[in-house]
Length: 281
Picture (cartoon, rainbow, N blue to C red):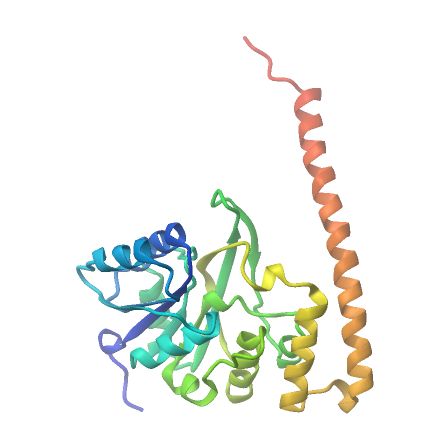
């Protein structure tokens, strides 16, 4: 098999945005500081003159840059549009306000792509709060299509690098399903298991669409995905429905439990400071 030259690998980073100039500015700094040449594609959903003025001012020194600003049908429509705007070997969908972990991440991913010839890969992702303080690490180093389809173990979309070969077979995103990213990943998994990258590729912000939806709504979309792809558990729709209901209840209760423990642990730290005050000499 002919060896791929990493210098000839083309990369497109697609950023959909709507009314988030601060977040778009942060993403721009991250993407355009990469030490590997890429194409940054910004798909703005007609956010207004301030956004267009910013997009006009962007002048990358070492990267290609494409942008558009017009009304669309939402996040997934923007991602579909961005994919159609540029042919590349690798794609990353990085939302406004999300950033790459370091300025060498794209080069490291390309090196892995060249060495291991995967069709798609998933990196580690760190969730940050509004002050950019890390709050959690999103990892899934031993993926199974069952966990992905059920929704108990999902991927951070902003940490996934797709090859053109796999996206040509699974695109476009379904505009009628708010879990369309999971649907696309299940389809990709049916083609090839992803390469799990043992490095943090992305820092992503809280407050995305998925985090604002009730668990029941998210799992309802996932059940719809399983129906569409014929992935019902034990091949039984009724049992699949009951399992989903149980998971929603279990995750809700466990989430409340861990939230309470975090509150108590913070109080314990404060009490520790009170019990052992700093002694001035």
